Length: 538
Image (cartoon, rainbow, N blue to C red; front, top):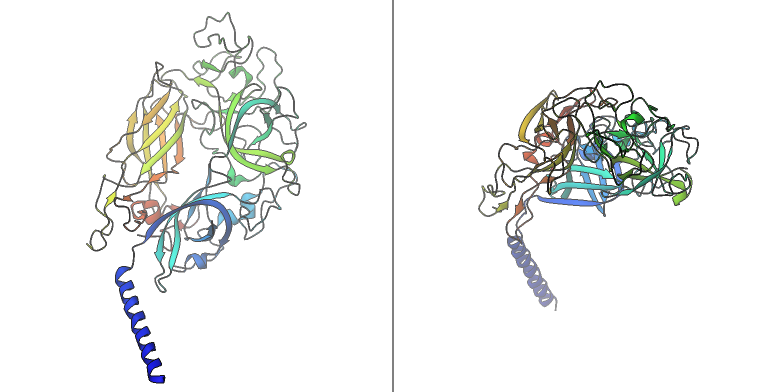
């Protein structure tokens, strides 16, 4: 019986060997595969040593240190030198873990948002602080075999953005403004209600602009990581004119200035007897109500007249569309509506205010931005050097830029911002020049578009872009903003895709993005941020 048993064992063993040989032939090593994952952050670590598993380890005290992020059960390596895009600001991965970076501004007592070595935005961190249990992250990367073990590693190339929810926002009419912080919960100057009964401080959604420098009103921020963009107009009228919450309540008297940076004289009253073509009567508004659309005069006008170098004051009765994060009034309190407020990183008011043609200042805002990462359409296949692994690609060179300017008479230039990877020095590279739409049938006055299906000269992709009106740049105006320009990061890049379903998933071409492949130089005066390490491939 023993020889027979050995024979069976030999047959089984040979069968397994043959099967494994066939399996090896049917499943050769696959190239790196791209991935995109969106979901709640379950866990996050700061560990430059782990991030350098396949590269160079880095101490957690280094501003360039990476770590890991876990989303939907997938643990993703965050390389050292990673810059994370928040809704309206950018930080290194290590900075996001610093309690001093996220500590509140303008709050008494100061609010601490997380403990040391915590992100404070994950399910694992809990909700003992300002935030609700978890925020959302969008991560694009490649699955790369470990250089030693061959085990698959998810490595991030882009984390853009981290937000409570990517499409989280609200809409409604401002029904109450607490100018001095003595009425609404939390006692923060500049908080306001939206969607309630006009004049009633107890109804409507409680809102606050996240403004750590006082660009749009009073200085306050529950967490500066989720700030507005204080260098560009992200709190604006629909056509890009900057707005803000006045720090002084209106008196209703003629010529009332109130807040010098956003004077009430910048909202002239609706007058049925008006003969001024710049301030025509609006039949949709009550007589005496602040105008919602008009033309600013040139700067330097008489006292008591609108001033285009100042912001527009938001007022009760204005309709706004806003985005942000839901936070707690009392950090230790319950997750009830009564204990929450909405912290805004962006706001658009249903207002349309234009500046004089060809006269500084003017203002620019961008609504949509999409950039390709390919130089030519249907370019060479991935891994084209090996006919056994050549994967035909569909590449797109399509670009989309949609924005608004308060001076539609002037062209708008769109630039990519190239960065020297060693010094951080910036160079503006002109991509296109577009003429905004004049008023007319089917057109929105002041809107500009750049949407070619094929284009030349936009390669390579960069992290940030800038749109400039040829009216010229004058700064600072509007409480510290530079007029005539809008600088923004790109959240949406187009990557190549396989032409044939069933072929291996192709890698994300991070090698075509110099700010990742070569680095972006020093930030905040610190060390040079070099190439992502470990490199996510290909």
